[in-house]
Length: 69
Image 1 (spheres, rainbow, N blue to C red):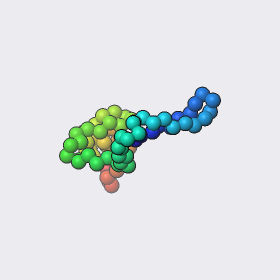
Image 2 (image 1 turned 90 degrees about the horizontal axis):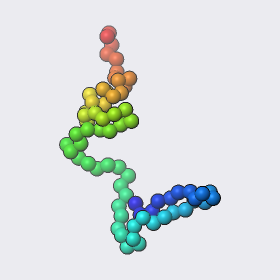
Image 3 (image 1 turned 60 degrees about the vertical axis):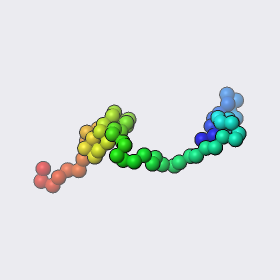
Image 4 (image 1 turned 90 degrees about the vertical axis):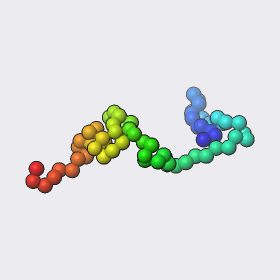
């Protein structure tokens, strides 16, 4: 990321450079952290272990009901 955009008080949209002109930058569209290095997840509902069960603790409505139970 080399620039950021925003609005001025008078309603104009402007871009501001955050880095020196000759500074290299890479903007990846996704996270490439190896799963073995992720130990926890931070969500809008809290922090949980980085696992299916950890997420289901925070989002119990996503747990599928088992037939007959």
